[in-house]
Each structure stands twice: as structure tokens, then as C-alpha cells.
Length: 384
Ligand SMILES: Nc1ncnc2c1ncn2[C@@H]1O[C@H](COP(=O)(O)OP(=O)(O)O)[C@@H](O)[C@H]1O
Ligand SMILES: [Mg+2]
Ligand SMILES: [Zn+2]
Image 1: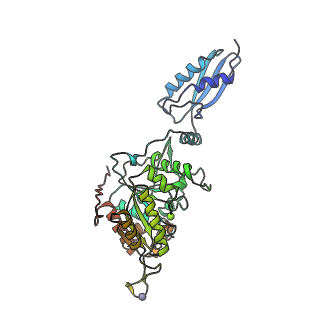
Image 2: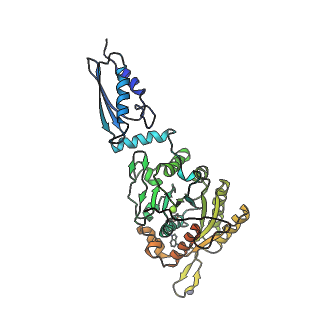
């Protein structure tokens, strides 16, 4: 009988599925090498995804059976290795490309996690600053808080939380969210790029996959609150989010400026079209305390009325009350806190801006003045 060919062995190996992933081991990068001796002895090296894989005996048995069945094979030797981190990443890439997608826990019936999407019409209004400070203020209430930075243009949240250079740990097909000094966990779309300096044009299906990945592939555990920093405007992320997390509630951030208010209204309307409830408006950069006169003289640097205007328009448009949740003053220490990765709510909790942010967080969790017609009913799930 003639020596078996590599093609014959490959065909046989393609018939072996990984028992957990349920796809051919040849598609998953698990076949490291195949050696065929002249006498028909075949030596195969199989890479397991993790050391001590509980399925290794099954794989061993299935590979042996498949290769033994090839005509001309006189013996089968199998060596089991373990994938390197890089190879595991490659595997995950393969899995992501297919339909092997996990479910989004926050979209399941009975999920106890409150999801708030922080939206704005345009960039630079303080959306990310509001997101991280609300996250910290909620965490200070004893709630378990996660932040998803979905802003494809900015992804500034990790830096604001002091974990700019952190890369998430991957354990097989699970991504661990990055813990921050304040106890809030974060994952950023910027962390999903293969390399930090890589420029990715996030759009359409790829963007949708990235969002699903941050929600489904990240091991969030039992969160009380998940905050999402959305990109400004009414683009693809808003649509994807509406499809995957229709139960998310939206907070619209605007400045007092007329032009900002107008685009903020559009962002709010977009959310409503995606069947998400807009629960309130945050007016940021509302005023600057006069350095000469003190609190009684507020300098309206960016004009006035933006928050009221957005709240009024959206209330009328949707037929339910969309309140102004708070007005955050301009505060130098708020910007500084963001720049050095120590948000003002932690770094300077008695600063006027921090006080307003804390009040907004209390309204969101239902601990402050309640939101009209809403029953948030949050309680900490922290288990010790
Ligand atoms: N209330 C505020 N007072 C002072 N600086 C602020 C305030 N809100 C935001 N900033 C600063 O304005 C800039 C833009 O804020 P950022 O949160 O990044 O906006 P966005 O996420 O909407 O683009 C940042 O440098 C931030 O520190
Ligand atoms: Mg931002
Ligand atoms: Zn003055």
C-alpha cells in the first residue's frame, strides 16, 4: 500500500471538530504540524486553546480515529501543545467572523443591570467627562458599575479613568474588562484594535460586531449599572445599540449653546426612533462662576437655555417628561481631573461641578429626587 498523502490526512483532520467550539480543528488553527514517514507512520501535533483543556482526551481520541482510517496509515502519534496568546487571539478572530456569537447578558429578560447610554449631538460638549464622573458617583453609592467606551472618534474614557495604556486580559474567548483605581470596570473600542497605534475606520457591520463584542464577549459579571459613552451624532453606533439593547435609557448631554442644542435634539430623536427612552438632559458648561464676585455672578460663557430647550423639545416630541437632570458649571479641576485620569467626583468631590454630577447620579439610581413616572429601583448587588 502506498504512503498516505498530506491531502488525505488534512481531509481526515477536517472531519474532526473541536468538542467545545464544534467546528473543524483545521479551521481553528489547532493543527500545528503533520509528519508522514515513508512507512506510513503519522505524527500530528495539535494545539489546545488552553493548557489542561478538559476536552483533550476527546480530541486525542477523535484525531487518532480519523487519521487511522486513512488508507496506508500504519500508526498515529499525537502530541498535544497549547496555543500561544497570539494563536488564541487568531482563534478568537476566526470565531468572531462566524456566527459563534454569544448573547448579550443585558438584553436578556430578567437582567438586573440598568443600561444608560450617554449621547450628544456633537463632540466636545463633555459627554465623556459626564460618563466617567457619573460612573464614579454611582460606584460611590456602592453600585457595581461598568463603562463601555463606544466613541469611535474619541475613545478617551480609559485615559480619563487612569488606564490609558492598559490592554485587557483575554482568557480564551472572554475579554476581561479593565479594572480602574476607582473600582469601575471599563472596556473601550480602542482596546479592540490589534495594535494601539492602528487606525481603524469603524463602520457598518464591523462596528456592529465591535459593539456586540464589548457587550457579549466581555466578562462583566453582575453589574448594577452599565454606562455607554456613545459617539456624537446619530450614526451607526446608535442604530446598532438600538437593535442590540433596546432597553437602554438615553441621557443627552448638551451645552447651553443654540447650535449644540439643535444637534442634541436630533440625537435624542434618533434614540427614540430606536425605541429607547430618553430619560433626561444634562447641560454641561452651563456657566462659569465669576472669579471676582463668586457664586452669585454666573458668567454664561456658552450662552443659555440649551438644556431647557432640548428637554422641552424632546418632551413635546415624545409625549413624556424629559427633564433637565442637572446643570454642570465650567470647572478647571474637572478638565484637569480628566487629563490626569482622576475624575473630579473622586479628586475634588466638594467642587460645585462634582456636587452636580453626584446629584445627577443619585437621580439615575433612584436615590435622589425620582425621575417622573420612572421606577428605577436600583439596589446594590455587591456580594462579598
Ligand atoms: N464642565 C466642564 N468644565 C471644564 N472643562 C470641561 C467641562 N466639561 C468638559 N470639559 C473639558 O472639555 C473637553 C471636552 O470634554 P469631553 O468630555 O472630552 O467631551 P466629549 O466627550 O463630548 O467630546 C475636555 O478637555 C474636558 O476636560
Ligand atoms: Mg468623548
Ligand atoms: Zn462678577
